[in-house]
Image 1: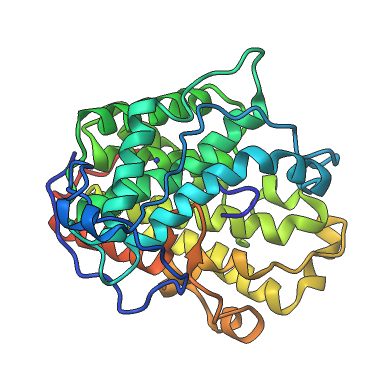
Image 2: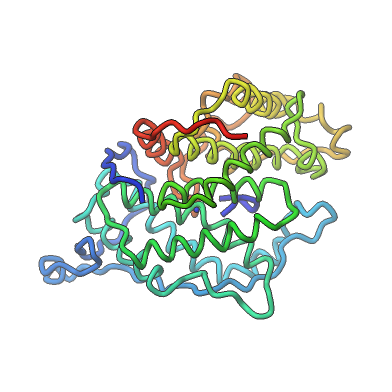
Length: 362
């Protein structure tokens, strides 16, 4: 995921995976049982399963030093990498394994990924609160949560059982993140990511608090989109106003898909409101100078990372300008956010097909 992403038990649904892999060469781990035990056949083969030691907490330096809280300080980002790289490596291995067409119980890479996932769960990874309080670490843990929740759904989709320890870990991570954003004054894209995480959590467990929060955030996000498609809080991001509109759009798309999987059908009014935002972004990609006056800055052009979620989750909303002036062929693998975005969206659509429709809530 990008710098401002975020960062989230229903019945088992087995799905076929997409025909294309992410393209990263896989190690040859042992075949593990679904409960994490190594099979005798694999042990005899001498193949190895990489072990990703659980990261218990994140104590990070604040990466934003500009007046708008929008531009990452690369020096601080690099300083934090000693800790974040360990989380990234764990998540990326699991994403690669689960986005493979071979993903299933009994597949060596899938079983290895699940074994590591269970070890992180048993250890309570990322749940230790540092003293003194570390805000950047708290925010970053929330940003990773989308990827962790998506991995849990992908494990379930190919037949893995999420045991008590794993569900308790997921509940703890999600509960801490929800509590943080329930009481936070931030109403920007990070709160929408938190809402998306809550919706994904509600898919994993029966959590009425998470379901209520995601619904509240959805209505906040819809209300924040102006009639011209802009969002006031993101327009204040100066030269990254366009980028932050794309961040908010991406978070809202994940939330939309997770809500649909919960049985919350998108209203015509909400679809139209979200289309306003999508059209504004597409038009601005073709003419970024058009917002220089309102944003009080020349716009930074988004990189490929800004397209992964919109292409994977929201192709129905993208106008012709997204293709003409954007990067329509950007790779769909969104590292540490659950992997292949089209695959993630596919799983959520499958869940939506069997979800009981929920009454509209304001």
